Length: 460
Image 1 (tube, one colour):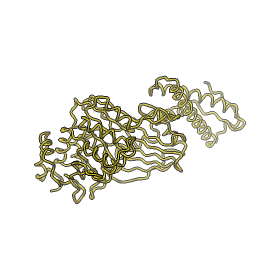
Image 2 (cartoon, rainbow, N blue to C red; image 1 turned 90 degrees about the horizontal axis):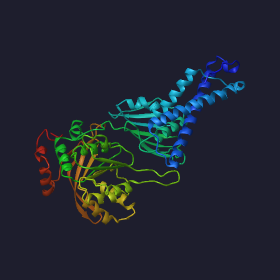
Image 3 (tube, one colour; image 1 turned 135 degrees about the vertical axis):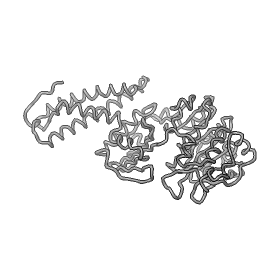
Image 4 (spheres, rainbow, N blue to C red; image 1 turned 30 degrees about the horizontal axis):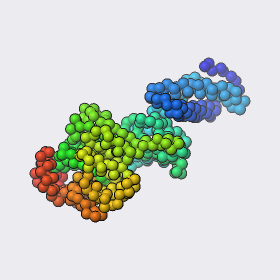
């Protein structure tokens, strides 16, 4: 469209007038694109049409923005008496490209995600805080001009994340999704005074046990022990606090799984990424829970997916995070021939994991009493591997405890802590393994003599 020149208020050379015109166009472009793109997605879903891929969405977005810019120019021309003002064609095109980058890129998040020393990003409205790999925390300049812009940014990112759109509005004020680089985003609005966003990144998306030893998470003896656990197809639960490295440890354990085994991974939000390494894990089915639609229909829970995984001929079932009634189908999977299955669990200690599992089991449709739950856990689970931070280095994560599950007695699961926290919270050898367990692990490559060598474990 040719932009006609005109005199009057629109030609005022004042910088403030030009800035106001640019701001009006930017806001119009953003709102038009956000509204029309979401409506197209909803129409496609209602009509049963396949979802657009990223390239199709971008082409549609370009057309929407071009039409919106022309409509805005006509409106400005008809409003010259009230201060309407056209922007130049090059400014208009630059704004269109900026809005496209905001929607299909990461906008102000881009430089933060490009900094590999940053592990966590927390945004409260216009306040930005980060935590770095060395444990330091910083406050950084704002990345959006307003709460509305932050909501729009997260809404647009969520709308094209993963295998399906995830909504973010007053009807769905909580959203969790994965960014293209694998970072996990959790955002809330409406239930908070200001929108809040938390982004967790995994610095080690592909990691094996040897690398975890080099990072100081485990020592040589634990590397040998954990690798043997995996090869022996022991069922393992990785526990620890928030952002302690449970997912990274799960990846490390999975690296010891033979490549010919079929894996089914189950997550609330894709994080593990075992299906992305075709050389190491060629046969992987990655499942992700699904939120209900606006009518409250179509939701698929983690528990549903665990039950479904049992029909998919898995050699192992791996649950990214156990935090609800999926504990019952998971322990059933572990005790029904799917040995070698794994999962993670938030817990402040290795012994506390059993209490958490019992609490989650009560939430399931089976409503198992604690005695039945403990018996099921004791039958299914073989080992708990717990992560903590050493006293002398708050930025590092280490294995601090390993428990072997022995059995159940009433309201308690009986276990032996074969590695316990040392003075600095790093695990040191403790209770001996059961004879049959030790023989099995030795057969699978474990060298118990490493615990007696000065270079075998981290305490001289």
